[in-house]
Image (cartoon, rainbow, N blue to C red; front, side, top):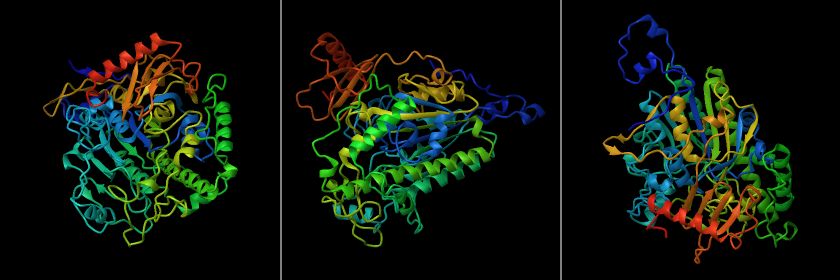
Length: 570
C-alpha cells in the first residue's frame, strides 16, 4: 500500500509529470509548453531555542515586524507541540515520525539501539526526499544536527579543529549530510553549537567552508543564502521546498552591536516585570485565556531582581537574546521581500516555529571542548563567564540566558527545553499562505498539532506519495496528520494521543488530560494535569484521579514499547 494524498489545491499538470520523469505522450505539444506547475512553494523556517512568548505576535517585547506580519495575515497555533530538544524535534519534523522511530531519541551519539542511533536512519524518509521525488526543487540553509558527529582522537586535536587551527574534511559521515538526504543544495552547520561570527562545521554542499569574511554573521548568511536559492528556483517552472534551520537564538549569546543597542535598557526592570508584561500582552492578543491559563510561579522566585548581584550582566544577556531574534526577523523580512519580488509569494506556504522552549543551559558551566572553542581563529581567548564578569555579545565570550530568563521567555508556562512540561514542548507556530490558506486572516487556533504533522501536510499540497520502500529500505509508516483542514478553517480530527521521551523526561496527552515526568525523576513519579482548565500545569490532580493516571501511564508504556523507546528508557 502507498500512502498517497490527493492534492486539493492544484492539479498535477502534464508539465509537472514531465518534471517528475513521467511520460505524458505530448512532450512536444504546444499545450505542454504552456502549462505551468501550480503547486505551492514551501518555506519552512525553524528557530532554535526560541521561547514561546519571545515574538511580538506571541506577547514578547522583541521587535519582530516580519513575523508579526505573517501572523496577522496568516494563522497562529497555540497548542503546537515539538519533542522538547533540537535533534529530536528536527528528526520528527523532517520525517513525519516520532523521533525515536526516526533514530534520534537522545542526541547525535550512536548508542547502537534502534531508537538511539543519533542520526536519521534508513527506515525514515525526509521531507526533501519525498518532495524531490514529487518534482520539487529542494534546498536547506542552517543547522542540520541530525547526523552522527565525527570527533578527533584527542581533546587537543578536537580543540584545534574547533579553533580553526586544523582542518578535517568530514563533520559527520558524508552519507548523512543533507545533500545525501534529499536536499539538492545546502549551506549551513552540520553540528549544533556555533560561533555566530566564525561557525564550526560550516559546509557548502559537502565541502567545508574554510574561511568566512571579517564581517560574517551566521544568521545573515542563512538569510542571504536562502534569498539566493529563491531567486534561482523562482525562475524555473518547478515548485521549491526550502528548509531554513536558524541557529538563533541558541547560545552562545552572539549579536551585532547595533541590534544589542536597541534593547540595552529593555530588561533592566527584571524578570518579574517582563514576565507580567508578556502575560498581559498575550491575553490582549488572544494568545492565552487568563480565565484558565494562570501565570505559573516564577522559577526560583526567592531571588528578587533588586537583590540580584548580577543585574547588569543578566539584563545584557537578555538584550543579546532579543537582538539575535531581531536579526533573524530582519532576515525573514528579506526572504518575504524576495518571494514577493519574484512573483511567488502568494502561492508560497511559509511556516515558522521553534524546535523547543527557551534554553536554561549554562554554557559558561560547560567550558571549552567537544563543540565549544577555547579561542578564536586569531588566537583570542574565549571566556566562559561562570562569574558573570564578561558581558555577552562579542565572539570572545560564550554566555547564555540561564534558567530565570528561560522561564520568562516561556511565559506563561513552567520549565524549558529538554523537559516534557509545556515550557519545553510548546512551540509558537505561524502558517502563512495567501493563495491556499482559507481560514480568516489572523486566526488563532487552539487545535492540537505536532511537528510530525508537516510531512502529511506537505505531501497533500504537493500531490506527493509517501513510500513504503525507499532506496531498498522499508519505510516506517508516517505518523503525523495533515494540517490542511486547520489551514482551511475546519476542525480536524486530531491525534488520539501524543507522547514524548527525552533523557527520562516524558509525557502522555489524551484530550485535555496529560501526565508528565521531569528529567532526573528517580522515583518515576507521574504528575497529572487537565490542560483545559490548567494549561500552565500548576495544579497536580494525580491523587484525586488514580484511574486516569493509570490509564495514561499504561498508554505511555505501550507507546514506548512499540516506538523504540524501551528498553533504553524504562
